[in-house]
Image (tube, rainbow, N blue to C red; front, side):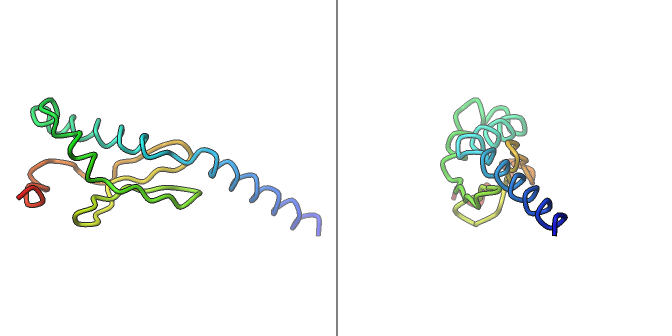
Length: 100
């Protein structure tokens, strides 16, 4: 019984930490803008990265979060424990069909 109680306490603590450190919308946008500008330096400097960030949709799942491109629903980042990870290349050549 004591092992089950200890396990539940640990799970509640881990869940609380994940909930408290879930990255925000701004954290996802900053990371995606940085990655987009790194892969597309000219377009990024001309303001294309901010447009790309405007088409992101943030989904909060309380313990983690994701951001998707709203036009085609492709998940581009996942955030957990205070960190945001970009999942795919953000090269403009892959997304030019969305701009037309």
